[in-house]
Image 1 (cartoon, one colour):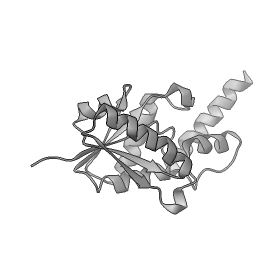
Image 2 (cartoon, rainbow, N blue to C red; image 1 turned 45 degrees about the vertical axis):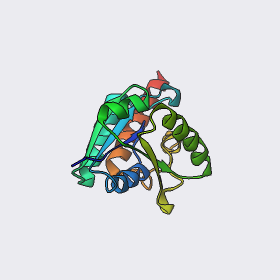
Image 3 (spheres, helix red, strand yellow; image 1 turned 180 degrees about the horizontal axis):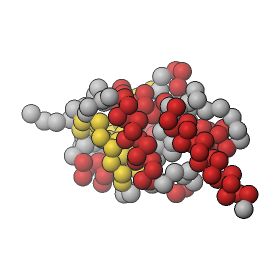
Image 4 (cartoon, helix red, strand yellow; image 1 turned 90 degrees about the vertical axis):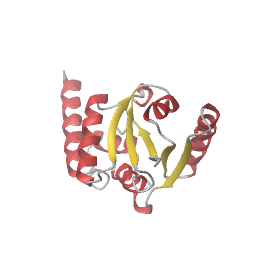
Length: 170
């Protein structure tokens, strides 16, 4: 019997309720879903790769989904997916702007390996505006982020913002 393996890649800096929604729904499409936590210095991460992996692992455990695992990677997505034995890339979409970028990426990925399909999942309507970048920005300016992340992630983000504020005062 063939095992269907999917990869849901991202920086997850931090993991949001929108990410959790895609994880929950994506896990139903495959026998095994691998959350690939990648590095992306251009996104100016708030958390280190190790911190983000631990954060995602904790959030996945809280979801109670048995067929999901978390793996860090720093490579071309298709090389990572091939190494994991994946046949599917799961991507979440929030808006038309996401689709344009993701459509281009899916086309390039298909050129690299036509055997790995990209599947797009629309974010739940209530979660569509949530973006990690905006969550960080709201927190940095003292806004409330509880509607966008789990309580534990909220605490971690606020602790990091406080620490960054102290470093800025030096």
